[in-house]
Structures are given as structure tokens and as C-alpha cells.
Length: 150
Image (cartoon, rainbow, N blue to C red):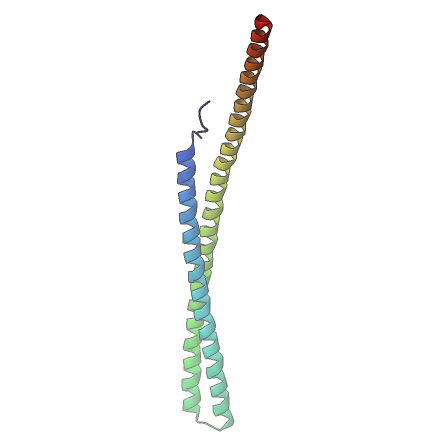
């Protein structure tokens, strides 16, 4: 009997390649999300530092003009925080999209792997039947030659 040859092996290899690409894309987008979150955390931390400095100035009886400058600066930082939060949200959406694509490609590959496994089981069953058939023929032939030879 011929060795096992899965008829959709090339398709399975293609699906594996697609899955690898999707894993890579997912990893890149996930890394980008972490980078954007870090940026947001740094901006928020910077704002908190600037608030403390402003509060220290208030304790030291600073001028109104200096407080206006600090408040204006804090408002600018708040705007940056809002903008960076939007970037983080968009990146999270991209992560979700990339994850969905990865899950879909993994499912498609798994379907083909299950089909290959089932085809291999059928191949092994047929091979076993063929082997049993040959053994039966050998036993029959041996028995018939022993009977004729006696």
C-alpha cells in the first residue's frame, strides 16, 4: 500500500503560514498597545508631578500670573492625556481585531488538522485490513500447500 498522503497538505501548510503571520501581527499590535499605555501613564504621572509643584507654589504665596501659567500648562497636559487615551482605545480595537483574525485562522487550520487526522485514521484502518487480508491469504496458501504436500 502507498504511504499516507493528505490530499489537502498544501492548504494546511498555507493555513499554518497564515496563522503564523496573524500571530506575528497580533504580537506587534499588542506590543504597540503596551507602548501607548506606557506613554499615557507617563503623561498622567507628569501631570500629577506638575499639580504637586503648583500646590507647592500656592503654599509659598506665588503670583496669580504664575498660577495661571501652571493651570494653562495643566490644561494642555489634560488635552494630551485625552488624545493619548484615544490612541490607546484605537490600539485596543486593533488588538481585538488582530485577535479575532488570529482566532479565525487558528480555527481554519484546526479544521484541516482534524480532517488530516481522520484521513490518517482511515488510512491506518485500510492498511490494517490489507495486512489482515494478506495474512489470511498467506495462511490459506500455507495450509493448502501443506495439505497438498502430505
